[in-house]
Amino acid sequence: MPVSWLRRAACLGLLGALLALACRVPRQVHPTRQYPDVKLDSREVNAVVVDARPPNNDPTVRQLSLPESFDPTVQARLAALASGVGPPLGVIVTVVAADEEPIVDARGPMTRVRVRLELEMKLRDGLVLRRATTESRSDLPPDEATPEEVAFVLDATAIDAFDRYFADADIINALNRELAAQQARE
Image (cartoon, rainbow, N blue to C red; front, side, top):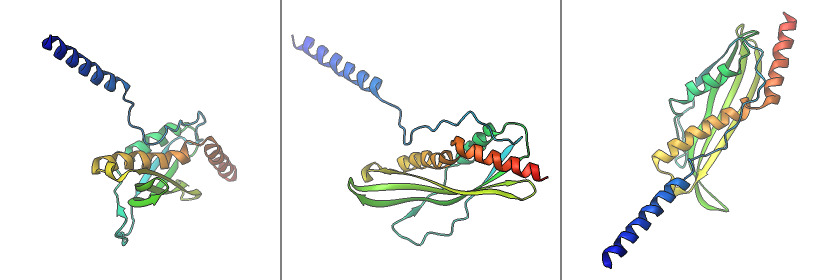
């Protein structure tokens, strides 16, 4: 009888572990922003990512470096926005903030990861069509703020900051109007 009980307990334990694995959801920091069907009236869109932040003087804020995957991800998203027709468009993405800092709010102590980007859209001749700022942030409990988790959250937050601007159909349409107005002047 004891062997049967041990087998049953082992089977139930294994079933519980399998059920827990099956119910796991993938980690997601921000909802995925879908890019609109509208394209930029540009034959190509290229980006340059610039991080020229001065050293941080606040000991409570830790300055973070964007992951190496940020630049190629931004390039791919912008390339997908190009319609293939129109003047080439350049986008300068300047990192204004990529920080980790402790905060206290109604939830209690948290660790905030914040990314703020300045964007400058310009034509090949140097004419600036538009400047904008975009930002995203994520909070996690301090006990979960391991270096690995902060790196994961930083990557998702940086892409979310970028997508908040470029995944907006109204912004793409406004840029298209500005591109058309510029072409009419030429």
